[in-house]
Length: 415
Image 1 (tube, rainbow, N blue to C red):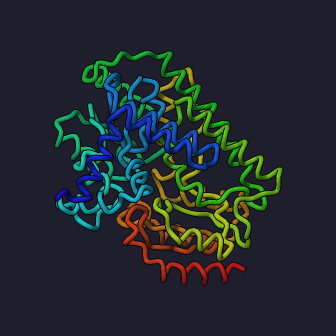
Image 2: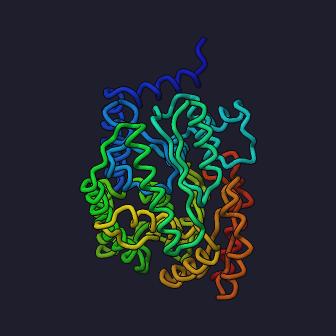
């Protein structure tokens, strides 16, 4: 008798790799009640899936999320971000599958579950083909190591972008030269043709999306908050995949209009609003009572999320590679922790937050390792910080009882 898990994997694999299967998924999603911007994002990721799984017209390059997406779209390459798709799989209830498959392969349990789940989903054939792999060295060491491991296992070329820890002219020069070598490498190994005008157009699209995203950020300063913070948990995926693609403009224009309508009609998504909060790091990608308890029961408003922040300046379309290099080195997670702390204080003030919550995802050293410095710096300015230990991917590693108790005490303290 067939194992139900194996049957589910085969069905999902067929849906992803079959044009008919993807059309069925698109029809199913179109029939579900969704917010307007969610329709745009669903269509975008289905388009990516169609290009990565069901088509062989363009090369597919696996990447970590901090390689600028404008580079892929400007070179005619289909990007695939295992980290993003592991989060998407978690939202579909596939966390246990990815994590259990990774355990069977011998990946240690103290590794980040985003990458462990991605490893398990890859061997389950739920990820597409890879023609090449690229990763940056900054922010998450494990991402580049896992991607290098995947490339080695499949005999595909791997390229590491070594991003300096400081933001200065020398760092930008160094990163620009690496991007130039990367393009030369892809022209040779993937057979692509470099078209400078196409890359400049991708930056033009990115700048337009950036302007709209900044408008959304400004609208979210409103009180009461027009949007639920829990509804913005997908923003890191949008920021790292959509920019440079026409869907980025459609998404942020639709989100801006939706946000503005919530304000003008005095219909905030969250009815009970007692305390405004700044959320640091990620949120659970699966459905959980944690955020609903915070918002609906306690009246905690996530007024802004750290990972929703547009961190880069407008890109110079006349000098695209240098602009993309600057975008990489300017990431607030890169370099001294003071950069992240000072940005947090600016956003806490901008969004009138009374406190901050840091969700410490299991296995994420780069974020959790900075907590002592972050807490001390926020305390200097009188901002209380609550640290919640949990998991973005694996529901079994989220202890709701103790977390609820800590949230309740924190909100009570802020009132």
